[in-house]
Length: 146
Image 1: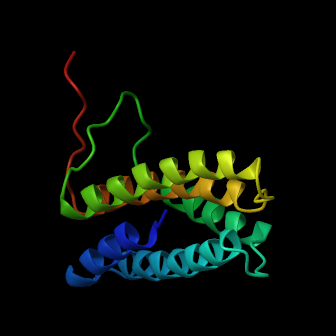
Image 2: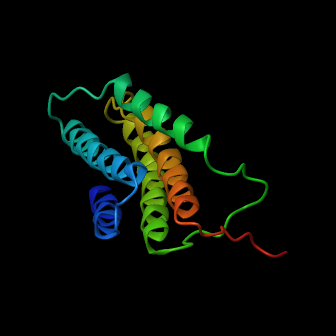
């Protein structure tokens, strides 16, 4: 299961935007770091002697904490895909969740315990990045009507 393509689409979309704000430039760098992390995870799953350490997960948690300070608290569900970039990130998040379920299954056959915490936090990171970009672009998230 490859997660690189959706994150690459989000990264390319972000690079195509006018990146006058330093914070959006930082996010594009963060997505590039995540792509490198994912390549190492894929190599590890394939059997390579690669180390996927706690520092990968810590990187995501640190970025989540910083971005959450500047976005509104969630009071309801949010309809994904406010704009094109956030839609790409929402797709990547969905695939990250699917990947997480596959790794749980794979743990029974191969020891992949060091990858699971990273992939778990990855989906949270992608969710927060999508919300952060929507807020930075001055757009309003939509909630479902019940």
